[in-house]
Image (cartoon, rainbow, N blue to C red):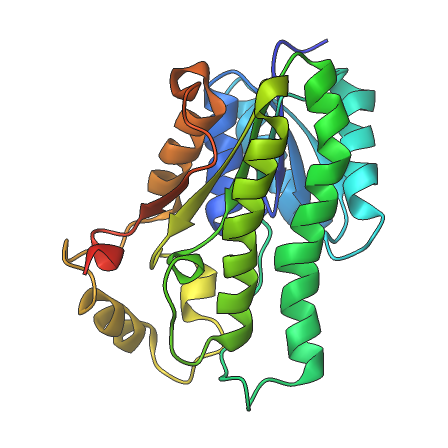
Length: 249
């Protein structure tokens, strides 16, 4: 049985991958959640080559059965579950009028439904381990609005308040629930579904960041690692922005 085990959804790219690698460096056995077997295998190889322990839980969080299956995979392979990082997410760039039913459903089924079901499945396992942490990757768009992001903003707003509700419900059980709310991060999602060039996207985002730079996923992973650790044992129900001052305006 591993000493500490973390399940990370959306761990095959971007922030999720950075979180999986960072938690492994902290000594967690990491269950790499994701849809792509090849990319999941690459993350496992990266972790094990560095001396860590990792396995996979393949599937789509939008699938109603994924949460139960992923938690079962963690328990079956490592014998326990201490931390869940809900990092799987998708985006569509449109206002309300321009958002189709299909696009709305795709965003909600991943960003809200998948996060909810995976958390629900993980709670008994984390409780059985004596407590632990659930960390949701939300967004600054869960704290403030954004133009042309109707479905995404709605989904991340739901994550923000679900985080608070779950924190209150499970605090007495030693289960802390927090959310990390990144602004612009140098990952594939920042540039996806746009007509602008990479450089144009970077310049547009830099103009809104007081600090004047765009971080990569590893900086977000540092905050996640802190929230997964007992160092943050009195941090609960928080939605923590990591955005270079963007939401301070």
